[in-house]
Length: 286
Image (cartoon, rainbow, N blue to C red):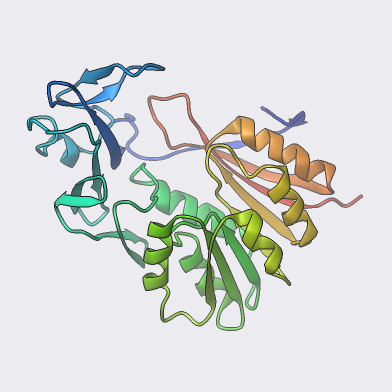
């Protein structure tokens, strides 16, 4: 495998279920002119009405999503939590199920709104959280930046590794996610939440030991990578759902004195061409 002209030999990982079905816990369904839930045909605006989705969590297929006639054109958003709660919403309004759903990852609990970002594969939060902690190699007292941190999936286990003498700076743009994170971490003295874009907030955070980032598919980009480099962290852990943007940003990091030390590729999008990667960068020895 080649990333940014760097020959790498990633460890390939998979997540249950092994048959690649019924793994997806989050969906935005379009509504057809007939009022039926469906999905867009590839690269078109044509809505294909469906009565089942084989990669959807079984609770989604067993719900009223596909049997009900929906009024209006707003998408039907559905989320199934790891604690078996199902929320159906349209726009900003919950129309079925609890307004907050509980996600449990190991011994960590997150009460979040369905509008906040959460990994869609049922096993992804635990797989990525465990890998991120392993890749960061944290020590008590470390100062960590969790960029594009969402509701704090990584922040919570980080706090347990760095202790009260360490600190986590969670940076997130989404208002929904920031509101959830603010409630989740309201009693944590070693967490600061920064609402805003990474390129505006990161320059104001100093004395950083480790940076972990899980950007959108478009990646971090040169401006943010340059800001990361300027902080001189002892490690950068980059989680990516798009190999192309990862390759671009890996090249930026390499050209600025950081080398790719370790990479894992995880099949978190079965039955699709997408793949998740997690990479550890460290300062080059040269």
